[in-house]
Length: 310
Image (cartoon, helix red, strand yellow):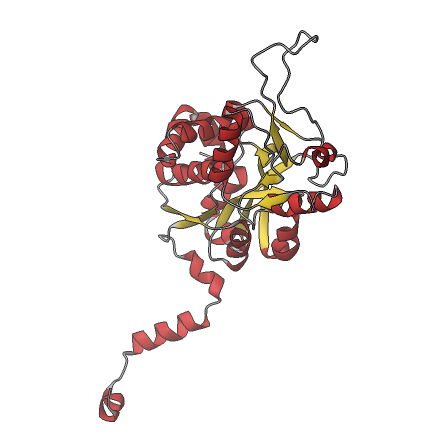
């Protein structure tokens, strides 16, 4: 644009007023746009996928509100809610697994409470019984014969000196690193980073061939319904006591989207319910999780009414 055009360009009075108005608005007020899709952060964990798709299905099918799911890492979810980039997350593992993230972001988010109780993390091994009777005992025994993290060091070679983990930013990976230090495993074991699906593939292969394996595991998770698994005892309490999966929302959501806030604040289901949805998703190889969420909400109308308030 040349000098003449600059001099002759005159914005309308209405456009100038609108420009000044929006420039003066606090950033959070822009969330008040009534037709803006609700944004829910989730991560590629079985429970997170199930939780997020259930909320999205209720918003869209029962309340007529558009909803977009945004996949990101655990640390990114907390930050995105704190900054208002997303409206909520339904995958905060508290009080222990995500304690570090709560310390950093807790005062910048609103915790509406647990959506699932009985959540637990730890180091997990198969508890699969051999197909023959144990000599002299008359009972079938698991091919992995330890019960505590304290015993792992004595069997490092059988475990191939590896703990199979998931994404490095996951809270359970920080706990696993602390457990290695607390139990003196650092020189004997390597914590393998990867994804949940890679961890499950390694677990399935080891069970199929009756090989020793230890993984970072948690409930709720469909793997505990598919296989006999057990948490190794944690006498140092590195992984903490059983806890909860919480819903976190951005500040201001209750004021500018009260119907959405009400749903998220009321969202709670039993471990067996989320377990069922996770199994449906897993049985379809992770495809079309939204369809599995629709199947569940159509079978549970009373629960949905309790969530939405109507």
